Each structure stands twice: as C-alpha cells, then as structure tokens.
Length: 512
Image 1 (cartoon, rainbow, N blue to C red):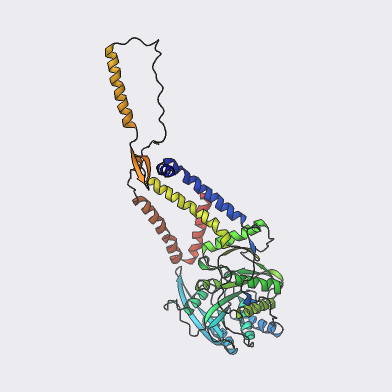
Image 2 (cartoon, rainbow, N blue to C red; image 1 turned 180 degrees about the vertical axis):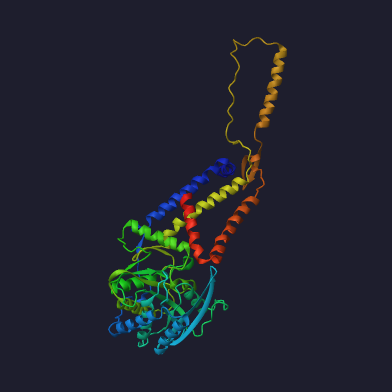
C-alpha cells in the first residue's frame, strides 16, 4: 500500500522529466558501442552451409579443353556486335541460342528516365532439363553492359559457351534459363517483372516463353575484351534492392566452390585487400550497412531478390593468373549444387552482416544495437509528449518542507516598549500574513486507486491544450520535401544530374 502511494505521488513529480535525455544518451552510447564490438571474434561467427543438399565443391567439373576454343570464338563474335544496332545484335544472339537447340525469345522494353527514353531488348533461352518437369528453373545472366557501363564481352561469351556445354548433360533436374539483358539494371528488372506478370505492358513486352518457379540466379560480370584478361579475385555482389539479401547458403556455396575447390580468393564490398583485421572487418560491415540503407541495385541480380529468388553477381577483379576456364568451372559446380535443391533456400539466414567472405554477424547479435539506437527516439518522443501536457507554472513538491524565513526581530533587550495600539496592529498584520501563506501553499487532494490513498497537488493534474498544428505542419513539410529530389531525378536531363550531386556535396562540405 505504501509503495503504491509513493508511486502515485512520484508520478506527479516533475523531476521525472529530467531522466529521458540521459536515458536516450545512454541508449545511443550502448547501441554504438554494441555495434563496434561486432567485428570481434567473440560476437561473430564463421560461415557454414546449412542446406546439406547443396554439397558445394563435391562434384568433378569438366568445363575445359575444347570448350576454351568455343569460348574464344564466341568472345570475338560478341566483340563484333558491339557497334551493331540493337535489333541486329538480338537477332545474332538469338541465332546462336537456336543453333544449340534451345527455345529462344526476345523481350522489348522502353523506359523514360531523366527526359531520356531507354529502349533495349532482352534475349533469353530455356534449356529444358532432361529430368525436369518444367516446375523449377535456375537463371544464368550475362548482361550486355555491366554496372560500370562497360560491354560485358567475356561475360556474354561465357553464358553462350555454358549454354552449349550444359545442353550436352543429362543430369539437370531443373530447367536452366540463359538471359542476356540489354543492361544490368533496367533490362533484368523488366524481364523478372514480366516473368512474374508484374509488368506494365505499355513499356515492357510480355514474355513469349516461360519455365517454372525460379530457384536461384547467378550473374556474370567479366568485361575482358576479345583478347581476354586474367583476373586475381572474384568480387561477390549480393546486395538487393531495398536492402534485401539472398539466403546466406547461396553466398557460402559460392565461396566454398571458388575458394576451396578452384583456389580463387573472394572479396566483398569492394574490399580488394582484406587482411582480416578489426579495422577492415568494421569497414566491410559498415559498407554493407550503407549499401543496404541506400537500397539501390548493385547488379543484375538485385532485381530478382524481391521476388524471393536468391541471386548474386560474380565480378572478376584484379590482375592474376585465373582465366575464363576457372570462372566457367566455378559456375558449373555452382549450378550442379543448385540442381540438387529440393526446395527454395530456407535453412540459413536472410538477415546478416558480412565481415569478410568467411565471417558474418547474425540478426540475433546485431539487432540489439539497432533497437537501442531506435529506442532512444521513442523515449525522447514520449517525454516531449508528456511534457507538452503539463502546466507551465512551477508546482512545489507537496512532500518537501517549506523553509521558514529567519526572523528579523531584535533581541528582547533591544526592543523598545510598544503601546497597546501597536501590539494590536502587529497582530492584525500577522493574521494577514498567515492567510497569504496559506493561499500560496499548493492545494492538495486525496486520490484513491486500487485501495491505496495518496495526497497529490491539484495543479499537477491540470491538463493544458496541446498545440499540434505547427508540429504536424513541420512533419508534413519534411515528408513533402522528399518529393523534390524524386521529381528532379525523374525529370531532369541526365547531364544535369551530375551537377546536382556536385552541388549537394559542396553544400554538405561547406556546411560541415
């Protein structure tokens, strides 16, 4: 009972409103501190494959020998199509797929972006698995141009070569779709939208032929010219649009095959030289968080992830001794693993932060950091809301004792003798002072709740009107301001966009 009475009285104490700022600061400090310890071995884990059916690196690859000559022939042929019109290029790619006895089709699309109409075509072919029933499929992508706007010469040639090579095998239990989109973002987005009937037919043509549900997708980014280029490492790009990620098993399978079976080092988040130090782990993690926060497409694979199709892009980087045959074997072994899947990826994580190619932080470990940082905003908002409904006049604490003013009277020996009239006037003045003091004391009332009694001051229960018009206008204005860059990015000419970014960077630099 006494505890309830104390809580009811404490509820009206203004000193409680002094705590939220300190609690918010504490949440921020602990949240950031939690984030900084994630790269340590004690808070991160080594990657592992959860889906036993994948069996990464357990098959023998045969992509070698004569296939190398076929690849070089296709690479020269693709190089000759660079300056050709889109229609002629599509017809030649379609003819190559048709020579391999594959079902082939094209898809036309056009988008208007930054007052510029982008018109292009996708070419795709379907290899029907000898052991498949056309209910499942995996996709191999070789975009005509990569994210750096370079012609993906060797990448497209490798897709054509693998299509010819895979056709000779009778072990496929899933259909394989070979896709050559016109570019790395809009083309793949148009194709996957049309595949799932989510496209606008005014701008994107419907697909003429289809297969089953997509189980996975792998994109190849190998822009080496007609004479080839030996690379050093594989850059695995896994970020999807809106911060979505593929299942971690797909990433781990690629790393196990490339690194363990083929001897190719793997890097992520453009960390070309990763020595597995704390600083580089933290930098890799922060780069991944930034990429997910921006939510933009990072490769042809990004458009597939929103449709629950786990996808990645393999990018060749550096100067080394690995050639196209190593990349072809890696893709062959990866597709052999995907061919073993009995259902969608589901065993491993969909939310994670990668520190390097073989170390990650799971959602259960990094989520408290994000929640602590988010909780501080809730605490501050609730404190401001409570404070806005309180009376602005100072309210004394009824539990505290009011100190009495020291008497300014002189000692009795020094006091002069007073007449009876003076004594009567002093008594009247004393009564008036007592009445004033009583009027200044806070009025109290007796509150009963759940059988407990508490004395609380009446002014503390006064409700003041909250003026919400101005805060709501500020919030609506802040949200509406986001329409300005949206309009500019969609309607300005492309050459002017670079100037817009430079201006924004200069404003940020001088402002900081």
